[in-house]
Every structure is written in C-alpha cells, then in structure tokens.
Image (cartoon, rainbow, N blue to C red; front, side, top):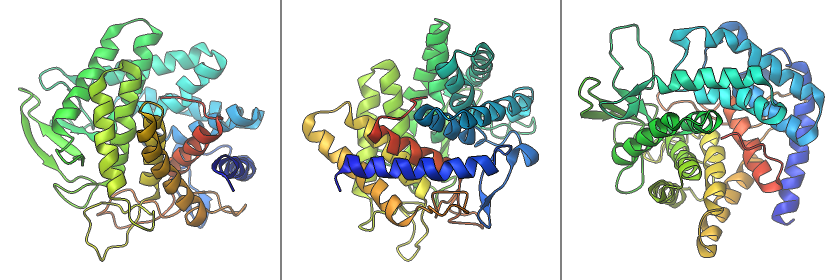
Length: 373
C-alpha cells in the first residue's frame, strides 16, 4: 500500500472510531482513560493544561467531515473553559494549548467573535507572563512565594503561536516580539550543542541571569526527555513559519536531527533518550508530536533533506498505527503506551494529546488538517 493510500485508510479509521467515541463522551473533557473509558477533567480540574485537546480533536474532525456533532462538542468544550479564563491561578504558559485548539480554531472556521475574544484574553495573559530581565515567559504559578518565578520550560515553544496569532489578529507587534524574544532565549539556553534539549531552565527572576537546568519530566538533569525534544522540533519550526527567522528553522533541524538519530530500531520512542538500556518505558505522544514537526520541516527544506524528515515521520506514524493504536469501538482512546513523566508512578497509559497529535499528523498527510498553530 502506498503512503497516501495508507494515510487515507488511517484517516477513515479515525473518523469511524471517533464518531462513536465522541457521541458517548460528548459532555466530557478527557485527559486519560480508566478501563478504556474517558475521564472528565471538566468535573475534576477545569484548569488542567490538556483541556483544549479534546475540543481540538473535535474541530479537526468537524473540518474533515462537516459532522455537526463534532462542532457542538467542540463549542461546549470551549464554553466550559470560560471558568478557567476567570481563574488567575489556573492561567499559565499553557494558554496556547487550551485556547488555540478551541477558541482560535472556532474563530478560524466560523468567525465567532466570542471565540476571538477568548483567544485574545488568553494571549494577553500569556504575554503578561513575560519576564523582560531574562527575556523568557514564566512557566508555572506558585503559591505567591516566588519559588518558580524564574522557571521556563521547553513546552512553551508550542504555546508561542497564540502570541503570533494575536499579533496578526490585532496588528500589534508586541505579541510577536515577546514570542520571538522567548524563542531566542530558548535557542540559547535550552538547546544543547548536540541538539538535545533541557526541559526546565531556571533564571534569576530579578536579574534575568541563568541559574541552572533541571531534568524535569525526563530521566535526570542533562538527559533528553523525548516529549520535550518533540515540543522543540515542532515548536521551533512553528516560530520559523511565523517569523521567517532562519535561526529557528536551523534550530528545528538541529533538534530534529538529534531525535531522528536516536529513534530505536523498533520505531517506538522511549520516555527519555538517556534512560537506562534495560528500561523499556515508552511515550507514544513524543512520536506523534515529533512526526508533526518533521512533516512541517519537510515543507521548508531542500529536496534531499525532505526525504530524511519525511521518512522519519512516516516511520514513527506507521509504527504507532501498526502496534500502538487501539481501533476497538468500545475503547475510547487511540494511542497506547503514553507516559507523562519518567519518574511518575504511572506509565504507559492513554493521554488525550497523544490522540490529538496523531490525528493532526495523519491529516497533514491527507490534506485534511485544520492548521491551528
């Protein structure tokens, strides 16, 4: 089967399964599954950082099928997140993950002015997290003690498109400037010489001086957490798309080359590229996210380079589809063997953004993607 036919076949499997899954979970905002059934973060934690991905999946499916059920579920997800918009402690650098796949996607497809307003409110809050002394966007909140006021994380590269969007939407270069300054800081302090990346970098919040790095959700300090590496692959190429600054594309390629060089023969991505050899823990989300980034890099490089990035992306996706996807109708998730963090007690379960990025990657191949970044 050729690649296009394969991707179109996978796309149809996604649509068929998600029509059933969406119908029985239409009032939820899922994060993971228990015994194959989605949980509901709208009941337990409306401010959870992944709460935009279910709505994002629904908009992708609506864009690909025009089935009104998907649109209705996405709109409900977005409205539920209004409670988060009113909770200052629940707003952080993940605003992009929450409101790009929901409000901005809605506005992009329908022109809904309320959705535009939500996106701009979220963007203004994200811009307000910028630390001018260190030229970085603060990651998380604390309890007012300033303990993480100087922390920035690689994940934020994927949230910068909310600022790029806002800058263009209201013709205000401040948002783009903030995003680009953070990206410049990430190039300097997050990306190592060999192309691996740090998860967490701490700066002195008062002076902006570099303090230290942390292993964060990876194996340890100085290791390479694979989902962080994937965020960097995709995040830097997105910053290039919005700014056309060559350094961002060069950085995306550097990080991608490291990722590709460390893909195991099996094609399944470990939680950390530096984890012990006898540790078999995987993170399917890292594979799906990296595939999205690789497919975007492919569009921007020479013909010879295109082959490298395309081959790696297809290899990751076909390995996932072949052995890490669950296509059973009575199981809510698609991707299996996803891991949030190396040192968590629970590993290799389903995580909603794994499904989101797998769908996005497949639809980059079929031409059905709603590009939200």
